[in-house]
Image (tube, rainbow, N blue to C red; front, side, top):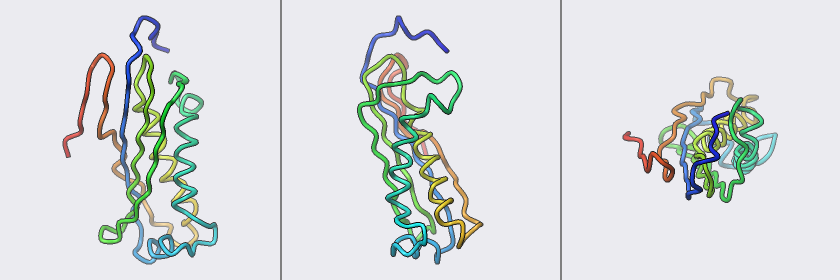
Length: 145
Protein backbone atom coordinates (compact mmCIF):
# COMPACT_ATOMS: atom_id res chain seq x y z
CA UNK A 1 0.00 0.00 0.00
CA UNK A 2 1.06 3.57 -0.58
CA UNK A 3 2.09 5.39 2.61
CA UNK A 4 -0.37 8.25 3.04
CA UNK A 5 0.61 8.99 6.65
CA UNK A 6 2.21 12.37 5.89
CA UNK A 7 -0.69 13.62 3.80
CA UNK A 8 -3.11 16.15 5.27
CA UNK A 9 -6.70 15.20 5.91
CA UNK A 10 -8.92 16.96 3.39
CA UNK A 11 -12.53 16.72 2.33
CA UNK A 12 -12.69 14.32 -0.64
CA UNK A 13 -15.55 13.44 -2.95
CA UNK A 14 -15.81 11.16 -5.97
CA UNK A 15 -18.74 10.65 -8.30
CA UNK A 16 -18.90 7.67 -10.66
CA UNK A 17 -21.48 6.68 -13.24
CA UNK A 18 -22.36 3.70 -15.37
CA UNK A 19 -25.32 2.14 -17.15
CA UNK A 20 -26.96 -1.24 -17.61
CA UNK A 21 -28.41 -1.57 -21.11
CA UNK A 22 -31.32 -3.96 -21.61
CA UNK A 23 -34.35 -4.81 -23.72
CA UNK A 24 -37.26 -2.37 -23.35
CA UNK A 25 -39.45 -5.18 -21.98
CA UNK A 26 -36.90 -5.90 -19.24
CA UNK A 27 -36.77 -2.26 -18.22
CA UNK A 28 -40.57 -2.11 -18.10
CA UNK A 29 -40.66 -5.16 -15.79
CA UNK A 30 -38.07 -3.54 -13.52
CA UNK A 31 -39.91 -0.21 -13.44
CA UNK A 32 -43.24 -1.93 -12.71
CA UNK A 33 -41.69 -3.94 -9.87
CA UNK A 34 -42.63 -7.21 -11.58
CA UNK A 35 -39.32 -9.08 -11.41
CA UNK A 36 -39.47 -12.41 -9.56
CA UNK A 37 -36.49 -11.50 -7.38
CA UNK A 38 -38.17 -8.32 -6.11
CA UNK A 39 -37.32 -4.61 -6.14
CA UNK A 40 -34.38 -4.55 -8.54
CA UNK A 41 -33.54 -0.86 -8.20
CA UNK A 42 -33.82 -0.82 -4.41
CA UNK A 43 -31.68 -3.92 -4.00
CA UNK A 44 -29.10 -2.57 -6.49
CA UNK A 45 -28.89 0.69 -4.55
CA UNK A 46 -28.28 -1.17 -1.29
CA UNK A 47 -25.73 -3.47 -2.96
CA UNK A 48 -23.82 -0.44 -4.27
CA UNK A 49 -23.70 1.15 -0.82
CA UNK A 50 -22.52 -2.08 0.77
CA UNK A 51 -19.88 -2.56 -1.94
CA UNK A 52 -18.43 0.93 -1.44
CA UNK A 53 -17.96 0.10 2.24
CA UNK A 54 -16.11 -3.13 1.35
CA UNK A 55 -13.88 -1.83 -1.46
CA UNK A 56 -10.64 -2.45 0.43
CA UNK A 57 -11.67 -6.11 0.84
CA UNK A 58 -12.08 -6.45 -2.92
CA UNK A 59 -9.28 -4.35 -4.46
CA UNK A 60 -5.72 -5.30 -3.48
CA UNK A 61 -3.73 -2.48 -1.83
CA UNK A 62 -6.78 -0.26 -1.50
CA UNK A 63 -6.87 1.54 1.87
CA UNK A 64 -9.78 0.81 4.23
CA UNK A 65 -11.58 4.13 4.66
CA UNK A 66 -14.05 5.69 7.07
CA UNK A 67 -16.59 6.94 4.56
CA UNK A 68 -18.90 9.72 5.69
CA UNK A 69 -21.38 9.56 2.80
CA UNK A 70 -22.39 7.03 0.18
CA UNK A 71 -25.26 7.83 -2.15
CA UNK A 72 -26.22 5.46 -4.96
CA UNK A 73 -29.04 6.16 -7.41
CA UNK A 74 -30.40 3.81 -10.06
CA UNK A 75 -32.53 5.73 -12.54
CA UNK A 76 -34.49 4.08 -15.35
CA UNK A 77 -33.95 5.72 -18.74
CA UNK A 78 -36.60 4.19 -21.04
CA UNK A 79 -35.68 6.36 -24.03
CA UNK A 80 -32.15 4.90 -24.00
CA UNK A 81 -33.10 1.36 -22.90
CA UNK A 82 -31.00 1.42 -19.76
CA UNK A 83 -30.74 2.03 -16.03
CA UNK A 84 -28.29 4.83 -15.21
CA UNK A 85 -26.34 4.40 -11.99
CA UNK A 86 -24.57 7.16 -10.08
CA UNK A 87 -22.57 6.87 -6.87
CA UNK A 88 -21.29 9.75 -4.75
CA UNK A 89 -18.80 8.91 -2.00
CA UNK A 90 -17.36 11.34 0.54
CA UNK A 91 -14.90 11.35 3.41
CA UNK A 92 -12.44 13.51 5.27
CA UNK A 93 -9.12 11.76 5.04
CA UNK A 94 -5.73 11.22 3.42
CA UNK A 95 -6.74 9.37 0.25
CA UNK A 96 -9.40 9.66 -2.42
CA UNK A 97 -12.60 7.72 -2.84
CA UNK A 98 -12.65 7.08 -6.58
CA UNK A 99 -12.31 3.32 -6.14
CA UNK A 100 -15.23 3.26 -3.70
CA UNK A 101 -17.47 5.18 -6.13
CA UNK A 102 -16.48 2.91 -9.04
CA UNK A 103 -17.07 -0.20 -6.95
CA UNK A 104 -20.50 1.04 -5.89
CA UNK A 105 -21.57 1.63 -9.50
CA UNK A 106 -20.18 -1.68 -10.71
CA UNK A 107 -21.77 -3.80 -7.99
CA UNK A 108 -25.11 -2.00 -8.37
CA UNK A 109 -24.95 -2.82 -12.09
CA UNK A 110 -24.03 -6.44 -11.45
CA UNK A 111 -26.97 -6.67 -9.05
CA UNK A 112 -29.36 -5.39 -11.71
CA UNK A 113 -27.97 -7.99 -14.11
CA UNK A 114 -28.31 -10.78 -11.55
CA UNK A 115 -31.88 -9.91 -10.65
CA UNK A 116 -33.04 -9.59 -14.28
CA UNK A 117 -30.91 -12.16 -16.12
CA UNK A 118 -33.73 -14.72 -16.14
CA UNK A 119 -35.61 -12.53 -18.63
CA UNK A 120 -32.71 -10.84 -20.47
CA UNK A 121 -29.27 -12.39 -20.78
CA UNK A 122 -28.13 -9.74 -23.26
CA UNK A 123 -27.96 -6.94 -20.71
CA UNK A 124 -24.61 -5.20 -20.51
CA UNK A 125 -22.93 -3.03 -17.92
CA UNK A 126 -21.20 -0.17 -19.70
CA UNK A 127 -19.59 3.24 -19.44
CA UNK A 128 -18.41 2.89 -15.83
CA UNK A 129 -16.22 5.88 -15.09
CA UNK A 130 -15.33 8.56 -12.56
CA UNK A 131 -17.04 11.77 -13.60
CA UNK A 132 -15.93 14.07 -10.77
CA UNK A 133 -13.30 14.15 -8.07
CA UNK A 134 -12.82 16.83 -5.43
CA UNK A 135 -10.10 17.41 -2.86
CA UNK A 136 -6.66 16.09 -2.19
CA UNK A 137 -3.25 17.18 -3.41
CA UNK A 138 -4.17 16.97 -7.11
CA UNK A 139 -7.29 19.10 -6.64
CA UNK A 140 -10.59 18.91 -8.43
CA UNK A 141 -11.20 17.06 -11.68
CA UNK A 142 -14.20 16.76 -14.00
CA UNK A 143 -14.70 14.16 -16.75
CA UNK A 144 -15.25 15.78 -20.13
CA UNK A 145 -18.00 13.85 -21.91
